Amino acid sequence: MSEERLLAERFALETVIGRGGMGTVWRAWDALLDRPVAVKEIHLPPGADHPELRARVLREARLAGKLNHPGAVTVFDAIEADDRIYIVMELVEAATLQDLVESEGPLPPARTVETTSRVLDVLQAAHRLGIVHRDVKPSNIMVAADGSVKLTDFGIARLDDGSTATASSIMVGSPAYMAPEHVRGRAVAASDLWALGVTLYFAVEGKSPYLRSTAGDSLAAVLSEEPPAPVRAGEALARLLGGLMAKRVDDRPTIEGIRAQLAAAAFFVPGFAISVFAIVATPRATGIRILAAWTAALAIRAAVDLAVLLDFTAYGFIDEHANPVVAVPSEFKASVALTCFAVLIGAALTVGRSIRERSRSWTTPR
Ligand SMILES: Nc1ncnc2c1ncn2[C@@H]1O[C@H](COP(=O)(O)OP(=O)(O)O)[C@@H](O)[C@H]1O
Ligand SMILES: [Mg+2]
Image (cartoon, rainbow, N blue to C red; front, side, top):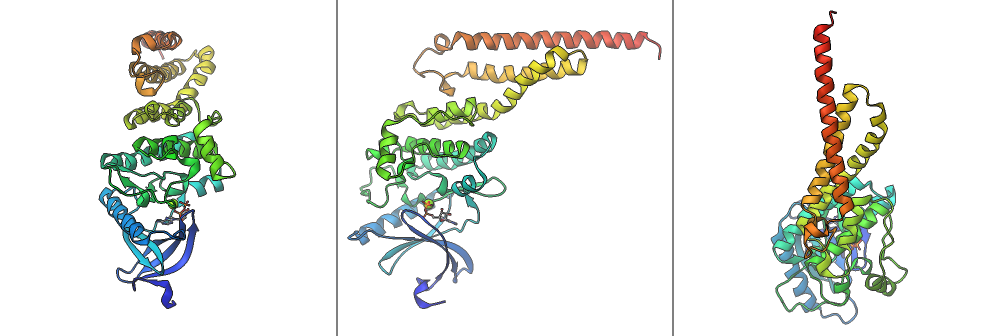
């Protein structure tokens, strides 16, 4: 190993793992602790204020260290050498969400929901500490084979305490994933939710809705264009995406609201299957088992619909300031009432038939 490839007499840079907008990421060996690490070499723009930038990187590395969440990549050190800044961090041996979608195609909605919910855990922990990530995007989310995720690049996160860290020109985030208010200069916690929405959109639809051939065009699209309607996401997930990608910060759901919607989305596919099953099975529902299965399936569907009905604002169907009772569409109320009615009829028929069959089996000699 040549001398200049040894950082701080400790980290031996081995191979390049990847390159991004800010620099190069290396796989490296920590000779002191005898373990592999990842080293991000940040390419500074000409004329950059090194001491300021180094102080900022260190401040942010310390901040990321405070998070100490299993879903966040740990930053070990920040080093200044050869006119560059190197961030030493935990090596994650997993594909990024970007790689995953590029190699395997869009994720199924159920898997997207699971990944989102894990990223949400990390963001929630960060936001509680006042840390805004500011660069949530598919290439900053590593997904392991067991489905666990690691969110990386908290290095550009910043404590939202009014600290005087000036936004450096190289550390602004990625245009196609930046929220409108972030583009205008102010990232808040809800900006991470926007970025998560665009990331989700990419994961489930297979294309980034605001990615254009130049950064300027991407930023313009973020500010003024609506994303194309999702085609693969399914009803509930599509509604969540719409809420997350609301141009106004106040129109985006809270993390608790997102969790409720994810639960609804997780139920959507089974719910849809249940409806199809009900349509196919009803005319054939002669046997008691089919009737019972149909009734149980419909009851699950009714329970989900009722949950949605009872907590309507959390699902972003209506303006949360509106009176929920008045604002719930009457078609929806009618469909929930009908489903519940069908469940009652199904249950009554099942019970009636089972009583009749039992009394017949008692009276009929074998
Ligand atoms: N801690 C890490 N462990 C393993 N690989 C990493 C790590 N951080 C980044 N990478 C890889 O390096 C690539 C480049 O990262 P980066 O410079 O942050 O650019 P970007 O996030 O825009 O892709 C990533 O796409 C990822 O594949
Ligand atoms: Mg990155």
